Amino acid sequence: MGHADSCIVRWALAEYGDWKFHLAATDQGLCYVGSQGLPKEEMLSWINKAMPGCALIEDTAALEPYVAQFRAYLEGSARNFSVPLDSRGTDFQKSVWDALMQIPYGHTVSYSDIASKIGRPAAVRAVGTAIGANPILITIPCHRVVGKRGALTGYRGGLAMKTELLALERTAENAWR
Image (cartoon, rainbow, N blue to C red; front, side, top):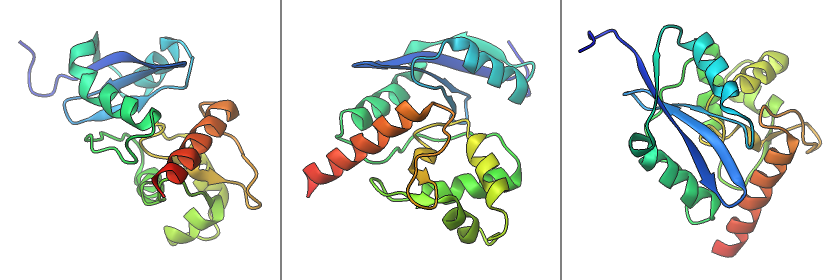
């Protein structure tokens, strides 16, 4: 059918309780998690920029393993994701996103903590920009990064989504103790 370099992105709407967000994956793994409650245009816009020329196919069955992990996370029965990721970004962004993956469930760190962790303590603003560009919300847990004094700061999914995710993790963390 296609040739080896043809690119297919499969997507689905993940729903759990009041949560509704779009997921997209390539054959390599999850590449995009949308903001809670936003229309699929948010996802389409990102895919058109990050992966121009890729074919987009709605495929609920193919994304079910991803949706199942989000369901388990949102119900508080899973702390971590084991799905493969296909993160699209610069080397700097990927180093920031890798550092985010090391923040333990139910914990928060500051932007300067992440800048120090990647060996760029002066690059706090650039770190913030890289965090804001994270295409794989929740799985790459940028919601666990807060301002210096614990203030909730910007979040692509909106502060309400960030607040809910942190509250969910605190509640589940307490339930496991």
